[in-house]
Each structure stands twice: as structure tokens, then as C-alpha cells.
Image 1 (cartoon, rainbow, N blue to C red):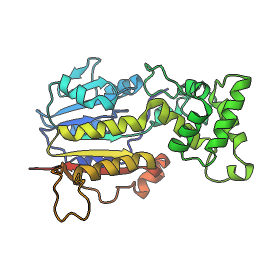
Image 2: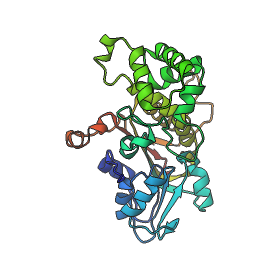
Image 3: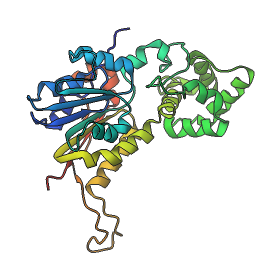
Length: 317
């Protein structure tokens, strides 16, 4: 299958990065290279781009799109197969001590959703997988068949925010006592049976929230996001910007909180007339409210509907 992924909020993100021709930029979710291509167009002779992705097919597609040969580096572009949680390590290994901007386009790509055998989508009957990096051992199948009822309930409730989480977890455990749950189709039927018929008629596909929850757990997505937010601000040069696109409330809440804390880290009690904790601001939040896709983009790409872009800028002094 040809790799296809529409870069969401592309122009808003490029504008938000305020690209300097001689700057160093990181695309932590390289995907098909859509954002990276536009960054590269704006870089001068001494500019540099580092692309990171854990999906081998995404890296192949990005190489084609950016017109790069098979090596790890070509001129001002370096592509690394890794998880963006290791951005700091990647930069240190490349001898980079400061960057002028970084972007993260979170969540699952259109290619991953539409590739049946990857097991991300409830639209196909396929083996339960959901790994963004197929080198890792943990799969959705192991979660569904190996987690106890309490763990399944926690995952579906916390990451899927499904009000039927307890019943879904109970149905999964009951079903796997008869036989191992092997496919997305089997899981679909179990979830459907756990939700009252009258409730299945509204709120979208009944499996949407549970599939999201299992995918997040499988790839440790929220843990990864928290880790990178704690570290990457330290790599931003003065005036450098961090642009993050989220696709659900859990991600957006983490980004919003992290940006707010970086801008105003004071932990003094509110009744104190002046700050005495000594914690210094790292910069400012550019987006008071998140940037949302426009009508034209939503018509062209309905999957952009839940996207939100937030931008943070490192202090100049």
C-alpha cells in the first residue's frame, strides 16, 4: 500500500515555527515528510533538519518525498529511526546542543489507520497489533488477552474515557476465557455486545474509544509525550519554538499544562506578594487558544476535525 498521510494544520505549523534559513529544526513525527518538506524549502545552505520516526514505512515514504537516498544523512537532512521520546539523546549523538524549532504531529497516521494488517482500525478485520514501532514486543493482542479486568478497565476508562469501560472490560475477560481474542473484528463484536443498543446509535462507532485506549497503552503515547515535553524545552535556542498538534483531549491537556508550567513555573502559594521559589520561566505560550483547522482543510480532510495546534516560544533572554 502506498504511504499516504495528509499533513494536518500544515501552513499554520510552518508559520508558527518562524523558520530561520540558517536554523536547526526537528520534526519529531516525520510521517510521510509533509511538514519536513516545507521546512526544508525554507532552509538556507547552512540550515539543518532532523527527522525522527519509529515507523520504518514512514521513513521510506519521507525519503522518497524529500528526494533522499538510502543513507542516514544527506546534506542538511538527517533521518533517524527512533521514538521522539529520545529526542535529547538523538540530538546529543548528532552533536547538536541547541535547536531553533521542533514540531510534533501526534497520534496515528492515515497510512497506519488505512493499512489493514497494522491492526489500528475497527473498520477492518485484522490481527490485533497497533504497534507504531513493529520492533517492540508489546502488541494490542497481548494487552487484550493478558491484562486483568482491573487493568483493562483502567486503560479503557483513562485513555478512552468510555463510560462503559467497566462493562467492556468484563466482556473482554469473559470472551477470552472461551478463546483467545485474535482480531480487531472479534474485539469489535465483544465491545458492541457490552454497550446497550440504544447507546450504540449515537456517539460514533462503539469501538472508537476502546481502540484509542488500547493503542495509547500499547505505544505508551501519553508517557512519551510527558517525557519529551520535560526535556525538549531545554534544547530550544532563544526565540526557538515548539509546535505540537494533538488529536484528543488527553494529549491536549498534557501539552496545555506543560506549556503553562514552562511559562509560569512558580510554585509559591497564591497569597505570597512576591515569588520566593526562584523558579524561572522558560518562555511564553504563543497560542492563548489552540489553532484549529479551517473549513477548507476540514472539507479536504475530515480526520483533521479534532486537531489542535499549540505553540511555545523559548525566552530570548
